[in-house]
Length: 589
Image (cartoon, rainbow, N blue to C red; front, side, top):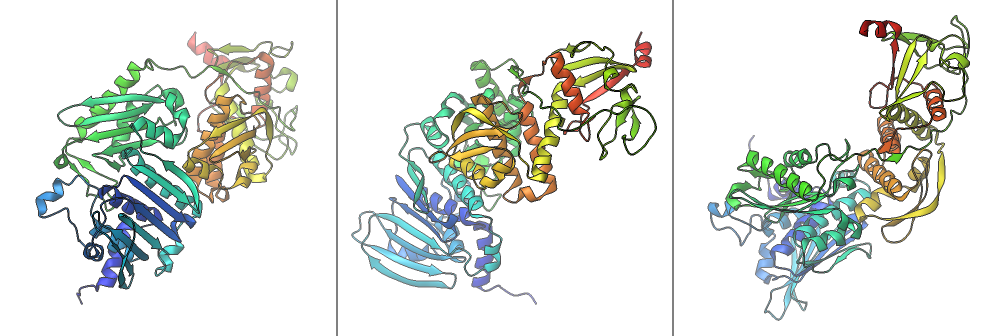
């Protein structure tokens, strides 16, 4: 039987569209404060918003009548007829957010309208209106949201860990802080300041306050104006691209939005300028007539639809590419400029002679014209590449490194009895490190080395909370990292194989943050995530370094590679080696 839902149930359904987690409340209340004309906004959070979210502003405030009315659905002062919906330039209107918040929490609203002598305190719960009393208070609005989802234990159960929920709150706070640098904003968690940002004169000043002063070297100005859209802001230096997806922001008419479509436009401008799997920073602000963009296609208004998306895509790519070219980052940057870390010798393995299958030698399989080793419990051998034992695996029998040839600083070639073996140094090292890190994750047996001078790194609050959420997880991976102040770490040790200069340490930490953000707090318990983590760490250990090595190191590399379970294939699924046989050579001549 068809029936109309009672308000108590319909409000809960509507609340689910707006209030999905504590950060949703922070977003709505911050935007209300901005729309109220506040010059200063403070956000106080306890227990990552689960216990308390309080937002205090010095905006225009409300009368007692407005304070009562704003908890009614669809109450607004901004829309008189349907045409106003396409021209609205503010964030929204209180009549949508506050009823939804009150449906899932206890809300106390203290507000005093500018120019009046007293204010009012209004209390609502999920059951509806509770009370309203006249009070003495400063001009502006002070709204406290307590015990979110207290009446919906099933919803509360699905909230993530405190650190995850706090990261979401920080993200929403930063969205508003970045698009409104002229407003002083403060974020306090459990009585400790996370951000206390004074009014900034420029966007760049606000970005540096949020991300740290080191960001100054990254930022490149972007600016263009067309009849379709204006684009201003900053993009990052390609050399400072990170392994983790962060610091990518789009805003339209002062509102943050997400767009994989326009992200591809930015990435197109960075083609061949950054390594695969890296992300540049960007802060891009679009300005267009409100009728040319629809901000109401998603309940949280984080997705928008532009009327001229194709033209804007091309414009974004062009303006970013022009900015990078102006800053002399085109043509392509060569990332091969450092020395590779030494490959540690394999712990325990030996070669075996002779033929015949048996318990003392691994089975072999035929692939691509040569025999490849199969992993076994016994020690590996290389009889598939010659049956005379280790002294004759390589054609020469002279000093270590004799007969080794390097090609383009990336490959090593050495003659075998059966032909010529070509090894990709980078992929071989990646395979070796991958299996080493995977063993550490599986066996809880970290292998690390101390750096000569501890490296201090200042992180954004969000990245800091991701990294330091579980110190045991860091130690398990071979990282010796300690807290060194507010959102600052001291890196004292790294897994074996990582570079120890400051740039290498920073890149390693960046990769680690990216891995943790993807894995989540319980990622270490999932085999697929552990493999991905080992894969990322392996890439980090070899990325951005020159593959040229000595002859002795080349022999050690090959020996160590053949001690791996899967020596032929890199963790990304590409060949580490191949053998050019006599028949192959003869066919080419």
